[in-house]
Length: 114
Length: 110
Image 1 (tube, rainbow over the protein chains, first blue to last red):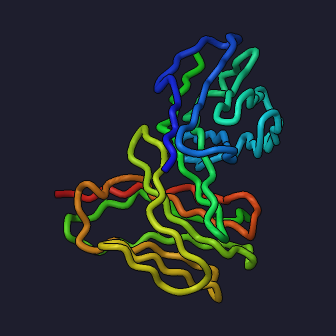
Image 2 (image 1 turned 30 degrees about the vertical axis):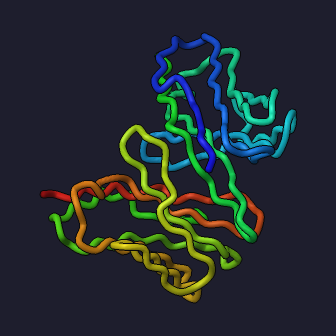
Image 3 (image 1 turned 180 degrees about the horizontal axis):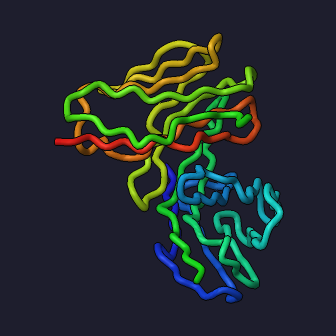
């Protein structure tokens, strides 16, 4: 089974500062990778997903971007953070069975933009 | 109307009680249904997975899908304080993206 490494666990950043969150995966190859954001009381919002190196699909146009420089590395970035970027950021890996893809999540990063 | 509706709670019950968590949905094409459990400040973990209608049991947990009513449930028997968490339902149509409910915050009181 796969292991998902996500760091840092907690991050406090000032408005206008850059952001880089990294997610790396072990135990699988060519996985589908996802970035989700969870705001308080608002459920999980899909931000980006990737089916391969350099292939990024954006679900919500906003102040964030994603990159996948290696097969098992997924990076979430921002050039200038906004207050509204605060939230709990989760990296996820898709694991396919014969008929369905199950998502497995990392431990998350709590981002506070002040 | 949201594709998936889930009562956010909070829901508080005594230890040992049977807990019922529910989601309704509007897309009749959803085929795969999942329940995730999320402890505070942790990532969600996959708890139950079902395909189409019917029941699936795993220990104290039972997942139920009623496609005719567009309604899914998660039952927890003999609830324990360690079951206190937020429970999220999720579902998808074919290879489409997973759609999550808002999550229900559950507290089991000793």
